[in-house]
Length: 264
Image 1: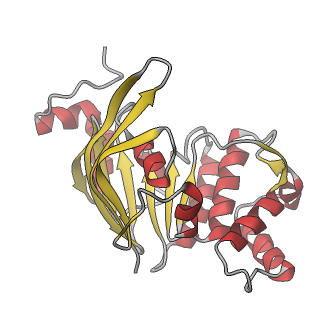
Image 2: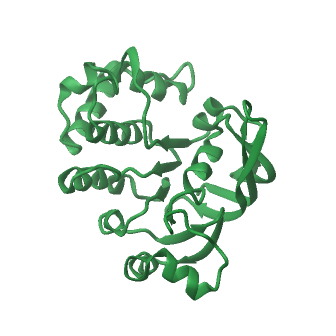
Image 3: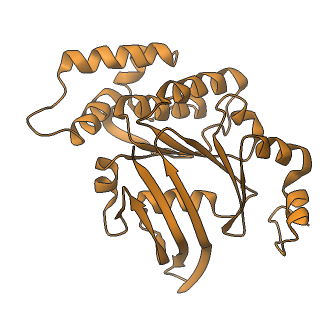
C-alpha cells in the first residue's frame, strides 16, 4: 500500500513580469492511499488545479509552506520526471500537442522510463497491452500512429490521457477535469477506463466541478475546496448534497466568509 500525503500546503503563483505573487493554496491537508478514489470539488478559482499541478511539480507553482510526501518521503525537491518515475501521473485539462512523436512511441518510452534498463518491455508485450486497452476505450488502432494529441478533438485527448494511464499504471493518478467537454458516451468510456484500474495498487485524486462524473466513478472520499483550503470532507453523498445545495449553500451552512468567483 502506497501513501500520498499533503501537509499544510501553501502555494503561490508568481508573475515575473508584474513582479507580484499571489497565494492560491492556503493550508491544504489530505492523506490518501492506494485502493482509494478521492474526489476534490469546488467552485472556480479555488485552487483545485493548482493542487494537482503542485503535486506533479509544475515550475510555475511555488510551495511557500508545508510538504508533499510519497510513501513518507518528501518529493518537493524532485523534478517532474522523477515524480513520474516514483508513480505519480497527471491527466491534464489541456494536454499538449507534440509533433514528431507518435502515441505509440510516447507510450513505450514512458513505460520503459519506469522500468530498469535491463527489463524494458518487449515489443510483443507492449502491443498486446496496447490492443487490450484500445479495445477497452473504443479507440482506433490508427490513433497510436498519430502524433501525440496533434489535431485531436477534446474527447480524443481525454481518451488518450486515460490510455496513457492504463498503459503506464501509476500508483496515483491526478485526474484534472477529465469530464470537461465530454458527451455522455465519451464520459462513460473514460469512466470505464478509470474504474478498470481500481484496486489495491492504484489510487486516484479526481478533480471535478460536477456530480455527473461521480455517478460513474464513485469516490470513496469527497473533499470540497474553497478559497485555497479543504473546508469539508465526506463520502460520496457529499457530492450529491453539493448538487442539491450548490457551493454557496454549503458555504453558508459552514458559515464561511468566502467570496465565490462566479458570484456577482
